[in-house]
Length: 491
Image 1 (tube, rainbow, N blue to C red):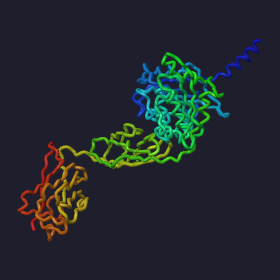
Image 2: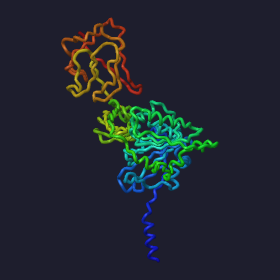
Image 3: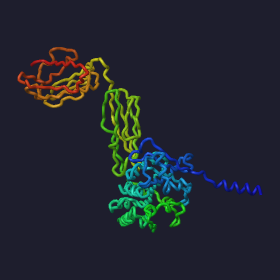
Image 4: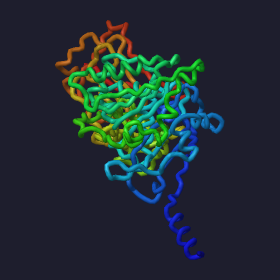
């Protein structure tokens, strides 16, 4: 008898599966575009011991569960539907469909306001980037306002619908149109909607029209969208509205399979002809140290979807640099050294296509306080002075004596930006033809300090009649002392 009991006990114990837990996740900042700072996470029992990817269900709550995603608010998510079933231990660890066993990742975010399609899409991006999600099996379930949120996400674009394998909206709040429904129908995404016939909060016409519009699309989608109505009648508004508690139970099998087995029948449709995204890292720039480089990749675009992830890296340049967040669209690079940096922005769209773009950031050492910095400007319309010149000094050239801005951010003789500019308000010369030189004999004064003996004979005639001439030097700092010298000769 003792032997028989031990044998039976072994049989019973061997059938026990390690229980999965639903864990609250609190974030220090809001997920970009998701309006969410916390969610419940349910991972397969073998998630930490394997490298495989898993089907994903994102559960989108109703208006009554809106909150800040903190310890006080997040438990509201457990009041209804799938999160409630999981918290009570009623969700199977796996489901077998077509001979294959599947275990779900279930993410139940709490939104800080009425969940929108943009919020849902951002949540899909976040989960896909941070967990091993099977991109072929992403499913959406939403109740009331959350049902409206997933209708909204899927109807924003065909690309959005293409990303989702199937979805189940319960009494969704979003009012349909033929145009919105047509995007879902064109994607052929499987839909199973639920609604109470006598719902006084969200009219059943919403779900009926979504399904009708989708199924009337030409060509007709396959499979056809379907609607299950429960004939619930009640004077209690919540009871009359609530159509998900029964349907989400794993034991609810109106057609021989439950909702989760129904979802697993479907994978994302055929491989998409996806247009590649366009990465835009911004215009090349320069700065004087100490300073940070603000990199902006938010202007990157994707014609038929969304940018799912960003990644910045240094391609070349000095070794020292630090990103504030190399995975953000906009980032700040600090700890820079003098030199030329090339940074690369890499973007990936929602279908996995990749694009890159580079930005050149030139950094200059700061002027040493108390030292002299020289700025040399060759004025005139003749030949320009090369930079660096034969004595290795850097020059700025003004080749047009007409009124207007003729020089901005002049460089010093060491090729450092000075911030100085020249704006010709009125010309000094009586004739400013650009076709000839003013002097025929070259520089007859020899070397005057920095001025080279090989100076060109440029035209900048100053006539005694030009009494209203004015040149404005811009960009001067009141904390600095400037000495301005002119070299010239007469005809």
